[in-house]
Amino acid sequence: MPNIGDFWLGYTGVVMLTNAFAQLKLLQLADSALPIGSTAHSYGVESLVAEGQLGVAGLGQFMRAFIQESGQLEAYLANQAWQLADATAFDQAWLDLNDHAAAFKPARESRHASAVLGRRLLGLALQLEPLPRWQQASTLAQSHQIETHHSCVFGLVAGCLAIEAEAMLAALLQQMTLSLILACQKILPLGQVQAQQLLWQLHPTIKAVVAQTPHMMLADLAPCSIGLDGASMRHPLLGTRLFIS
Image (cartoon, rainbow, N blue to C red):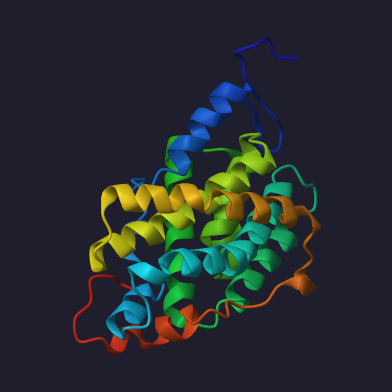
């Protein structure tokens, strides 16, 4: 066994890290400034604002629904991927999980955004630390011509770094929530302090979703139903757009 502060690489490419070092890597991977393009997407929020369906006053309620619905789906996918980090039967499970991710995203724009971010995150991870399992995941996707979705990649990367599932899920939901709040700041009169207050107030909702995720089954999930899918589909029709989706 490694000494405190050491790490070792298993045959599946799982790196065992001390908690502090693992958290440091998680902070980097969950940073909104990570160069994978997350700030270029609003996932339909820009359409809702342009149509007058969303404003600052209703943002808190909207974000809570977003975390409980879209966030729950992404958390489930990430948790399943996390469990595949050292799985012996990896190949088909990885392909199926990404197929499920695509199937639960009826809006082409959101589905494409998820795939682009996943592909870029996996590519960046391989440049940072080319672990065998990450390479296996990338090679499988290329050979079977499927997309690797962001939440699936995030969970797999965290699992291979031996980051605890609860911490991984909280970081993913925080990242998703913050990205959407930052998008709102560009298209709504939402100040920096207001944005941070909003994110802080959403922590109990994030905590509840994290707690529920290990008990979720695929049959319990449903596509987003808070209007984001429809808004994403209408996004290309906007006369002026700040975001890709």
